[in-house]
Length: 374
Image (cartoon, rainbow, N blue to C red):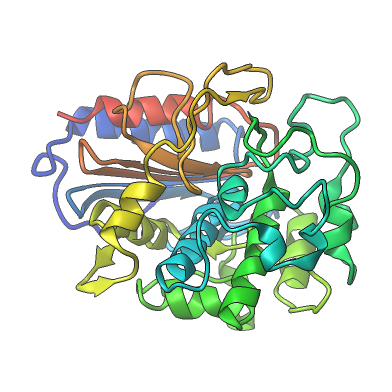
């Protein structure tokens, strides 16, 4: 059986109002995923009312035969959870009066000043309703256009805007990482700083996220979870800042279970952590409530008639096991970050796997996690 690494906790499960037997079941479930060879590694952290009561990791650090064991503080790509950080950066700039939520993107990025794109606002980008191309495979097309492979060039914005819109702005929810790459560029232009530097200065450092990076220091290369040789190549290249590369607004942050918990706890606290206010309470309320009304979504074949979406944050759509106000984001590869304000409960999950989305990795462990709340 795989051996677990245990991270810092603040309180016992019993004192957190959580079932010890359900925690053991969740731990066993993650361990079985690794022991069966379904995934390379897995880890999770749970907290209630700002106190961590579970913090575990199991499996191998990398895909290599001689890989050391993973640890709770291992760095992992958080993929699309990056979008919530980018949304937070945009909202901070809105709070500072440098942007406004309904502002047309053409005000900041001139390439949007066309009859086709002129009506797209920051709000549309934040809610995935801009009409820009959805992610490859979103519509279950058999031969998806790999948009992200086309953007490493000086005119990447024009490339991103090529072709027709998939819907008029505000009409449909189509999951759009391109929109958050654009938002990363907005952050750079509105702040006068490179996106990476603004994230470090305005979010990572104030929150005390000591192991959260976009550009990973060379000294930490042996503490990153790799799933493949391609992972190693990508992480190496993405840590080199290039002028013609889009900012990492839609994906590209590396973090840990603990740092993601701290980010989430800031939102449960109404925008503060350890006495430091990072974002306003009313801004948190706005980001974590539904922004859409009567907006449909294909949603990888689910064909939702009315989709719910916050600003950056999303909402659980495939079952009733969490509180109605629970907000979240997941990321490919796979990882998950959930906040349940009603229960003051945070759930962070990391799994190292390079296959398609699988309910065994995302839905089932999350259901077990909520079943333990007393």
